[in-house]
Length: 136
Image 1 (cartoon, rainbow, N blue to C red):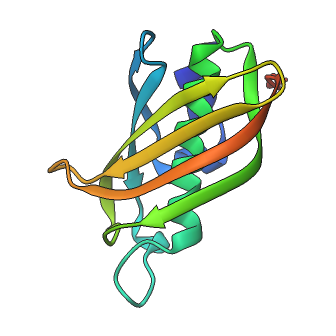
Image 2 (cartoon, rainbow, N blue to C red; image 1 turned 90 degrees about the vertical axis):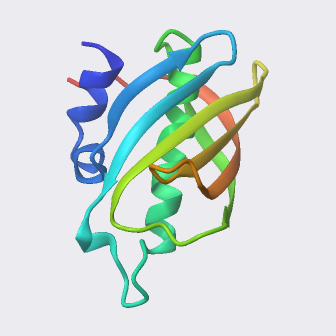
């Protein structure tokens, strides 16, 4: 099963509309597309902040999974997020990359963009590498 199929097989990823687009091995950067559903929208008219963090967590995690040939998955110790513009319902492009990977700690970063390429949110994560759970 490919990482794309694996991601789409989980209810949370299906809810976020995750679609794999590209992995750049040299940069250790993954590009995913999401579709924020209307049910994620608050009365302010934008995606709820914790759900934005979910998009960022997903893209950072898949960067590490792809960088390790799907052998490892990060277990977050800390995530920091900055919301720069409202994230609206509809298509979102996410880019996640491995900044530094050690045997005991990894550093990741992620960004979300609208379809026009405007930066909406960014995040960093400190995580520990763990064997990737397999779906039974």
